Image (cartoon, rainbow, N blue to C red):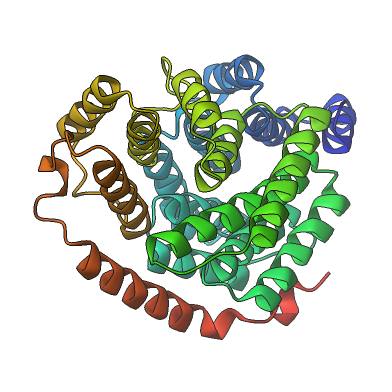
Length: 371
């Protein structure tokens, strides 16, 4: 299914009166293709633009090429260079004083900073994007709406989250962005599952109805991605499905899914949550009596290191490994050394309190973004 925005961009590209106008539109198209997993076509556009505009003759094209390169890196392998590339694009945009470019680059930078757990920086970048937003700059509406929708849902501020998601959805409809609508459905579903795992790690009870609702949302999100032809989120969707299975103690199904998703580079090595997935595999094997397989995976986890994980991931991982060790006493507790679950829980709760406070001034949609 061809997204409406692609049909519109193709029409505009064919009608473009100058090479610069055509190049800017092509870069915009390339970003969308990268987001839905059409990597080869996006790279082809990037190469073509580099060959023609690599001399920096037009700042708007140069900045958009850098954004395309950052988006490609992010959606292809969650590479750390994505943030560096877009940060450079933002610096150039700020120096130029071009508000549209500032808003575009800051919005994308906030998205990547959030994914890298740099929440304060993400909020600052989003604020810069809002302050410089131009008329009908739908990509900024989408990125910022998604950011605050996600962050508010992370701290379980559901009403504020709903408002920001609705902003992103309305902008996505205006722009014809099927991938963004898919991202909204995916993010909402995966964060609900993630929050359930956090609750379990904190020792809080969760209800069967909460699990069923999160599972239904996750299935709906998966179906939408298939219909929209979005393949770039597949490993993230798989991770969310596996979490539901782990929560339900469906260890055979979760183990088989984990073995498949951890093959090769399905989940990039640079993706910190990969270590949480490995801890899930340790738990599944321990619960199923496969002590040798559990020990092998635990050794892999030890070799990767766990002390640099974001606090949310650290909380879930330590809780998962603790459960695995309680089920199979033959497992080494080396991975737990120096990590007190009680202190991690305290740190996590303080982190969530601080994040909620930082979001307090972003509960409502600012006037300049209302659509």
